[in-house]
Image 1 (cartoon, one colour):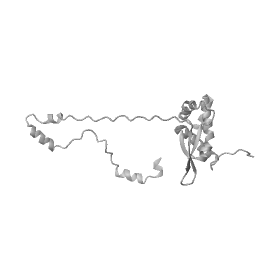
Image 2 (tube, rainbow, N blue to C red):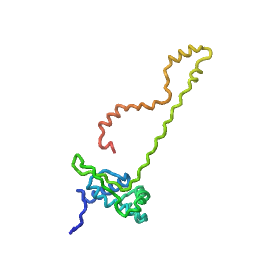
Image 3 (tube, rainbow, N blue to C red):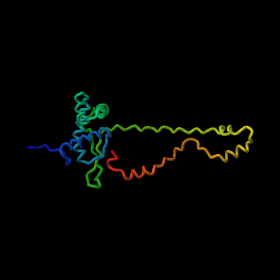
Image 4 (cartoon, rainbow, N blue to C red):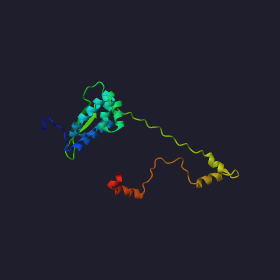
Length: 192
C-alpha cells in the first residue's frame, strides 16, 4: 500500500516526470529565476532545495550526488562555487514562488520560480565606437600634374565621382531572394 506517499506527478510517467524536474533544476541554477507553472514549481522545489543543501557541504560525495541530477560539470561548479556560499547562513528557504496569474491558453497558474538570493548580473559597458579617420584631401591634389592650373584641377574634381570615406555602417546588407523564401518554407528538420 502507498499510504502518505503523495507526490506531484505532473500527469507524466516516471522517467518523463524525473526529466522535467531535472530540467527545471538545471534552469534555476543557470538563470536563477524562471517562469513556469505552479505545479511544476512545487514539484521541483524539493529537488532544488536538496541540491543547494549539498552545495553548502561542498564535499566530493556531495558533488557526485549533484552530478547525478545535473549531469554537467559546469552546472555543478556553478552550484558549489557561486550558489552554495551565497546560502551558507540559511538553513532552508532557498527558493520562492511568486504568482503571476493565469495563462491565457489553458488557464494554468503561472509563477516566477527563483532563488531567494539572486546575484545581479553585471551590465557590460559598450565599447566606444572607433571614428573613421578622414582621408586627406592632399592626395587628390598630388595626382594632378604640376603644369595644370588650379581651375582645371577643380573642374576635374567636379566630374570625378565622390568617394565615400570609410565603410557605411548604417546600411545592412540586403537578404538574398532565395534566402528570404527559404525562411518561409523552412521544414521542422531544417531547424536542427
